[in-house]
Amino acid sequence: MPESIDPIGDDLDRVDALWQRGVRIVQVTYNLRNLYGDGCLERRDGGLSRFGGELVERLNRSRIVVDVSHSSDQTGYDAIEASDRPIAITHAAARAISGHPRAKPDALLRRVGETGGFVGVVAVPAIISRDGRGATIDLMIDHLLHVMNVAGAAAVGVGTDWGKPYYQVMRWEYATVAEAVQRGGFDWVGWLPEHHFDPNEQCEGLETWDRWPHLTARMLERGMDERSVIGLIGGNFLRFWRDTTA
Image 1: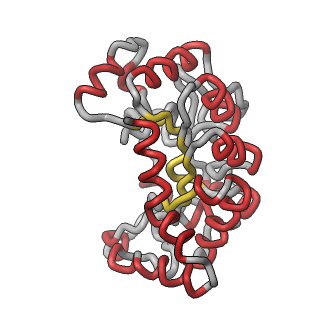
Image 2: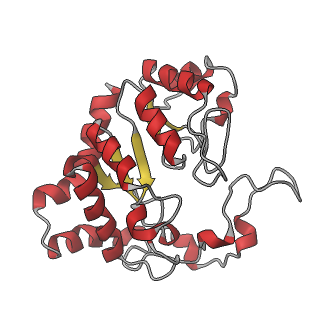
Image 3: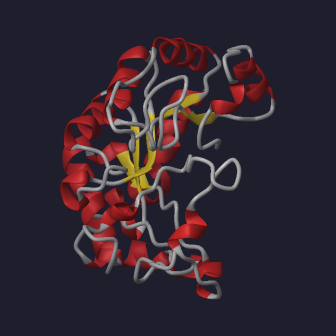
């Protein structure tokens, strides 16, 4: 899944080229503004651009899913209105819990659920924790439960965006996260120190891929019914995918 559809530039015919190469879901923006709309870390939220609206219509015709995980709130609302098919937030969290700009407000989560969309919850410490520290498997489940209550049980699933074992043998500094076109150039990733993004942080209980079954076990231990858990670990996404790409 492309993190942004920037490669098509201003040529909407390239959407068809993406489809022919197997692409079935794209993000409208990454963290910052592009031709199609605003990202979640922009200074002002102008939403989807006019050209972005045309892009959404073209994606609909190609049955490529519109994803607004990194987009601004208004871009998310505008994409829902512009799309005649359900959209996705494949990897985000509940802003009501963490306050992070990459997490989504309840009103947007609710609209995604009401329109048949899908919301995936991340295991990224910076996005699920208030200060980017001390994230745990239970905190991730708190986000899942919150989104279920807001968007509806059938609209939610796991969208980890995290769990990289190589972080255990590497040390990172904030400066290494910045990605610029050239030395001294602008940081198009967009993270600022106050966003608490530290690749060294891990979600306790989900540090490596072999520990993912702990999430299922812990949800059951917390009293969640088996049907809901099956939906969260993949059933809901499979339903969404069949409905939107068929």
